[in-house]
Image (tube, rainbow, N blue to C red; front, side, top):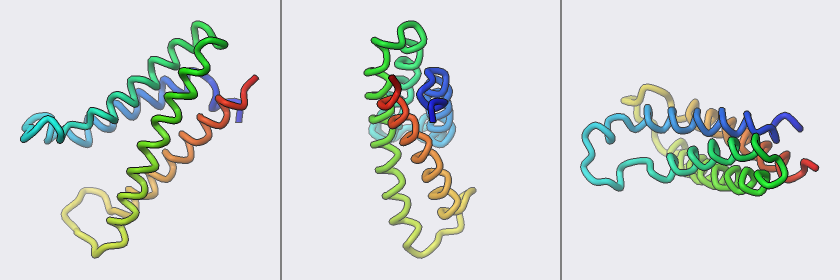
Length: 126
């Protein structure tokens, strides 16, 4: 469990979220109807996680609270996304997506578990 408290895990996870959200919303980035369609909150959470990981690499003691806060922020966004997509999954299926709703819920569940492990292990690290 100590692996998830490492700053490099926070940096890699945050960078993955930044890239994944950018790729997932590329259409709304290229052709925005309104600025609210952009995944700004996801970019902020991913950037905060990357920044907190960099700070924690420099100074573990003073960077740890930032890393824990960043993991908590990321966990809250992932939990909201997981519950929203879980609800969509229970509705009749639409087949025009490139990935099934069940697979997407599974991916979100895996990311949720990883973020939870990151938060718990950061808080438990001495």
